[in-house]
Image (tube, rainbow, N blue to C red; front, side):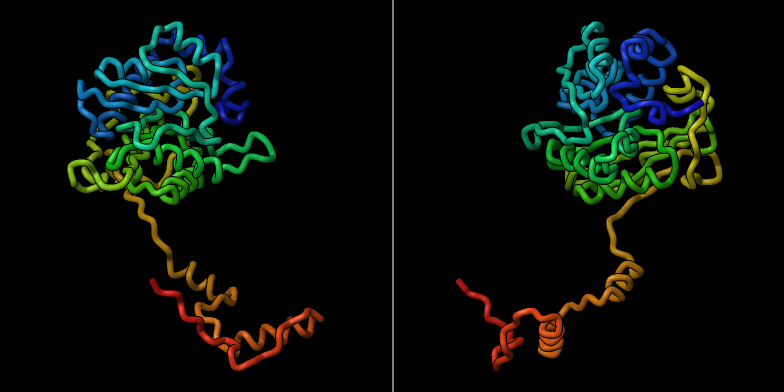
Length: 311
């Protein structure tokens, strides 16, 4: 079956009938609850600690109810008015906001201790109209989350990538926004139980510990897990990636921001130089004169390094 993102934009796909399914389907509720519990585990926020959590793509409020049960305060964002209406009917305790996360959002800096998202961020990879640029939308989103978190806060995004390209797009945008962290894959050998979690850190941890996500992944064989939330509505499978350890266990992939040697070579091949010498400047001015452009005459000051003002 087609993925929901291929059918229609999120605000159109999750209309009133679809939103009603999310609020009434018991299997959907179990799956969403289990993934939210896992996200809280990866976010390292303890039950009854009273944290302020941003729930992105809160939908019908299933993940929000888990946050409330754990004693946390939360604000939910979603693009679908119908889903938010279902959340209101469920008497969710959190605050709800209608928002297109790809356009960014503005909360007071450092207002949230953590952020989670269940089955939502893959929608950022889709181009629903000609003006949409997936990477820019993803970067704007991650930048908004980064600004909203306290120093040392953690964000955990469960998502269903269509392939390695979407994983690369999301991780690259997150790293550009300032996050560090990595990808956690639960049960990589199971077509239905496989889950992807992007675990991101906002600066140094509050307790001074490491930001590395190594050791967060627990082993498992997928027998106690159910299929994805979309498969709960209709039988479908997600594409795998190369994020497997050969034993069917959960695996952590660390993502780092770096500049490769190949990129440096390409940059040099484009003719960019780090120092503009006198010869380079005179050659450039000669080219401009040949084009008939007005250029100042050469003098003893041509190419001379200017002294920077000192205070």
